[in-house]
Amino acid sequence: MVVTPTGTDPSNATRRPNSCAATLRRGGGGLFIAREEHVLATVATTEGSRPTERRPLGHNRQMPTARRPGSRPGTPGPGPSRPTTPRRAPSRPRPPLIRGLVLAPGASAGRDHEGLVAIEDAVQPLGIAVERVDFPYHRAGRRAPDRPPVLMATVRDAATELAARLQVPEAAIALGGRSMGGRIGSMVAAEGHPVAALVLVSYPLHPPGRPDRARVEHFPDLRMPCLFVSGTRDAFGTPEELEAATASIPGPVTHVWIEGADHGMRRRHHDAAAAVRTWLSH
Image 1 (spheres, one colour):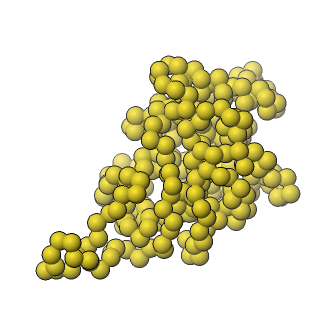
Image 2 (cartoon, one colour; image 1 turned 180 degrees about the vertical axis):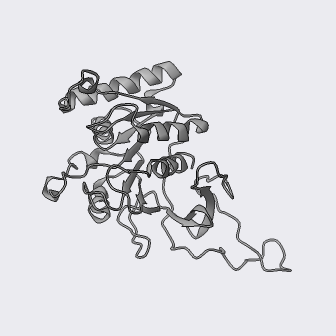
């Protein structure tokens, strides 16, 4: 799994202002995140394993560097022990108060989709309440999705109800989901509904084989932090296509690429959920 800021890849990093910059690479049985040449955390990827290291990732917090043996405190050390690509520090990787997360499913699934359940299980230990929703067409047993206004109203109402139940402002609620569900959440956010952040798994950038029909008209109105978790073999958008498209988003953007995964994230739902948990915990 690799995390890059919008418009970068791990081997040839470029800078984009206001990107949520981080690199997430596999190593030592887990994943580590590096930012500004400092190792910030290690997150285990195998189910039931424990993180080998866990450090708080405060914004603008400088991590200590190693000192040479015999040197005194305050003496510059040799730098970080892991080679990393310098990245621009994110301006705001995660809003400070996310109290709830609304998750919507893709077009052919419901609220009990394995991927949504995995995300809920991953983030609840962070103290974030999760509301998984069903769209009206799915509850009625129909296969064809409702029109966008109906889908958007469903997500909007779920966010309002979750905020009321938690007794928090709606701006403390993040929106997201898989495929169409995540896209609908981003459209609600672009309309101006108060949203803390967007968590978009397998964002359907365009229909397979139709890159000319990109679903990005609302991207310039997304000013909140955005997380995109996608497979490197997603037929609905290649890494290059999605990173180029999200360059129009003014808010901080993070991409997480699940190596070898397709649009359905088959057998990789826990990897996607771990990426969401890592991003929300920083």
